[in-house]
Length: 350
Image 1 (cartoon, rainbow, N blue to C red):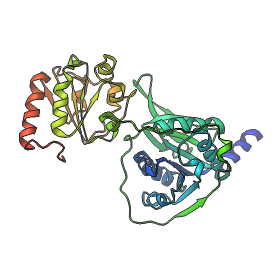
Image 2: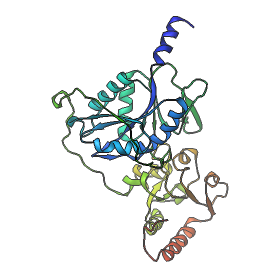
Image 3: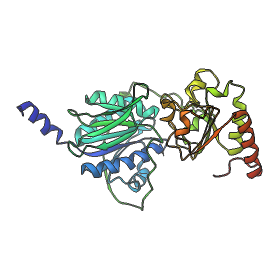
Image 4: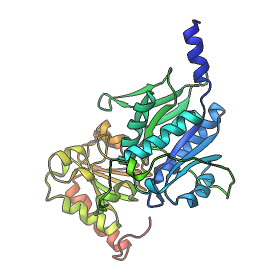
């Protein structure tokens, strides 16, 4: 081993622990943060490190107990007025300063709109690697490297990526990809408070107004029942048949990329590799063939009901229940049956 390599290895050995960025807005934590604490706990056990949450915001101290309850042993907190609303600059500075001071070995963030923006800024400043949209995370028992697996080449293969020479090893994970961990008993942990070192006049970006998005699709990744249609639906007008079923069940519509590209539903409804990852209790895949790019976005649903005229459609390989038939006959029959069973009351818990 040359002197340079030995020095690099010594520097890498200074990095320990697994960190999870706790994403919050107006004091409400994004559920993906809890999901990441679940997988982070397993990584910490495998690597022999501690699990830590990293919380930035203003008046967010009340969230630390819940972070401990989801398994963190310590929480790093920067709580200042300039962090009330998310802005890339001050949030990135806060995280970079924490990383450079406390040296985590692994740093996980949610692949949300905020997380995608922030993780790139932090990784670039730290000059370390970042693997986006991971579907699996584990520790190599021989090298102790983080194995970061994600779909590649249009979802046709799963690539496992490692970051050998830089720290921290950073990865983002989409919401609903990892299971939600059980919230434990009331636990205790250590809170480490730090200062940001910025004043409002130091920040170029100013927030004039926050506008909340509206519409059913906004909550697609949180929906418990999704009725999704693909190219086999045939037209935008035919989605009304699916909409009626979704209405009876209290669910929401979803769509494959083919249906979105055809202009039948908006991009916000798209499920799959280039859309949202969902994990509902029930997922109806209607007129969807089951391309791998779609499967990676919904195959962890609790129950999958596939309806397709083609008995060889790949969707049947992941379906819990498969119905081979014309959806224009099957779906209205299901809708009427559910309506009678639910006594016309939509939204009953399944």
